[in-house]
Length: 193
Image (cartoon, rainbow, N blue to C red; front, top):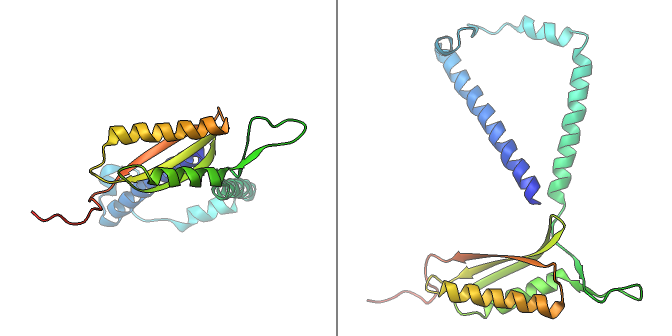
């Protein structure tokens, strides 16, 4: 899922949540009979004849059909956006030309980097993937870190590790994003004082 889709999800969830909150509060106020204090035009009872008039109008069928088509198209776009993975299968290496292509498996690169990161002092776990974000390859790494680790040193070690991988492969357009997830407790076991 791309950042754009995540943003759309957040905005849609906020709008739907806000609408549900307003409708829910209005329903409670209407049920208790206090909605008229907040909104003077609030009806005391619902009149089903008004709904019959709207659904019986000549324009209702066309509007309902157009709305259904738009909602179906949005639903298909939303589903397709969630099915598409930003993961990169292969990276094209420098030296590729008309005589042939040099490629690298993105999963292998990410796995190797995670394996090397697990060997750094203070790292208790590592996961890494290569994603495609806004047309750029991004090496996304999450490191589970012991709470007693020296974070400035670890940050320098991780930067060196990523720089070496970038230099060895010759991929200049490869960006990196690393997240350090500091564990709540040390994995060294319980301490006796």
